[in-house]
Image 1 (cartoon, one colour):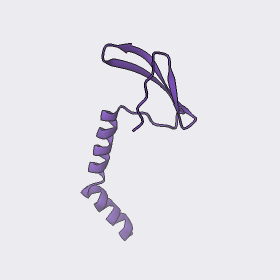
Image 2 (tube, one colour):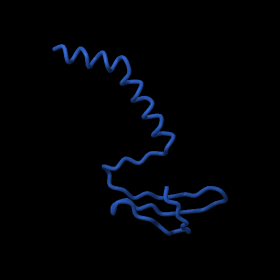
Image 3 (tube, rainbow, N blue to C red):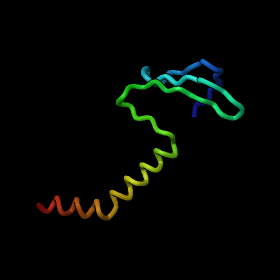
Image 4 (cartoon, one colour):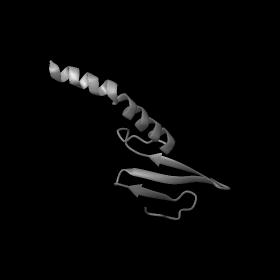
Length: 73
């Protein structure tokens, strides 16, 4: 993990096309702005983890049964 110190209105660039800017600092909260291409999904971590969990559940036994049925054809 790379740890950086940034002040309000300072930014960092990831992969030449994603810019993260510190917008506001209030107590222990930091508001950030993310400028990324539309094709780059950006999620809060807790939302991303929920999506991954739901995808894994959907790919469980029902997904395997559907795949088996498809391959039989």
